[in-house]
Length: 338
Image 1 (tube, rainbow, N blue to C red):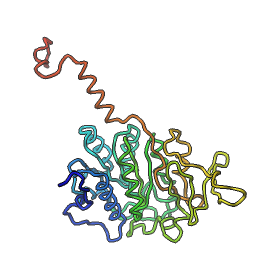
Image 2 (image 1 turned 60 degrees about the vertical axis):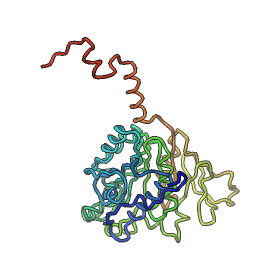
Image 3 (image 1 turned 90 degrees about the horizontal axis):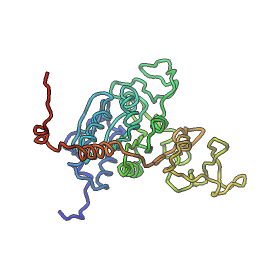
């Protein structure tokens, strides 16, 4: 095969039959991941896909890569170990809003805090699908489900807020059925050194159908979402004439051409700003008060845990007088064995 021959995304498809419900958003995400890996020029043997428990967690079976289907909520812990043990592997963690943010919440936030070089895809359908329709940590307040027949009385997590609050350095958001944009977000996540979190607004056709429909329907998604791009004005809408400004300490939706507002007044997105203030505001925007932010919201360079561990080990070994087992047994030290 010629060195410049491009990798085909079908090379990442396993021979296993995909057992998700017809119409499930997971199918689109699987395709997006495979296309992103092909576009990045990955080799199958340099990728490991790790998952916990949930509908999304069947993902490793459908990837022609290394994979590990672990236990509930522990995907982050296993993925962290895989990456630290073999830093050369490209490790992708697949998780859901229940797997990552409920039982796996502790592992999730500390993975982010440590900034281990993992690519985490968080499927957010605001429901427990595999266990048949219980409300999840991202279900809306008042949501009626099998475990909240009169409506939930809890405020949901906002994954972006949780990620940034845990000192996350990369957070992006996309929609399952927008494959073109999803592929770009996954590529950006892969290029980032450190923990990257990509929240995918995903649809469960059985237990929470059309949960994101208010912003994902093509008829009005342009007016209810904003695709952020680093270094570009925060404009959105069918006519690209709506934008975001600061009104004191709050974001404000404005229309270019009204009240003397010009494009020069619109905020320019800086995903690389270390200060989290504006990134948090963008990640927290919800319809109908604001458009929902899609794209790379935050992408900041910071020390990477596995790289630091590798460097630390090399420095300790370099200073040590003992370079091998042979050195140890001839070092003259006396060892007491009890």
